Amino acid sequence: MRSTKKKPVPDFQSEDQERAFWAEHDSTEFVDWTSATRRNFPNLKPSLRTISIRLPVSMIEDLKVLANQRDVPYQSLLKVFLAERLDKERRRA
Image (cartoon, rainbow, N blue to C red; front, side, top):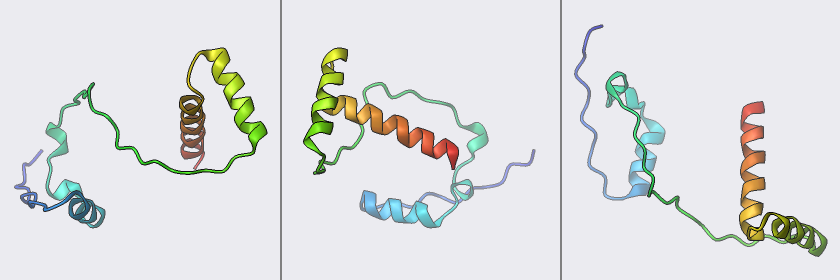
């Protein structure tokens, strides 16, 4: 396999600027992914954003009952349910 010189990754002033750049550019022009190694970041915490969502009271009560049975906070259980469904929908698409 022939090695080709990659373009240097630009310096970014903000995460938004970097996000916009990568949305428009192919990373293979900048990074040799064949030499990449898998890394584990056990202490990395995902970025969180608080949202407000209106749910029927009965749905919240059902969620609290299920969460209590599993000995977890109901908001954590809701995140698990949402993550499972998102994963299912991504695999289906």
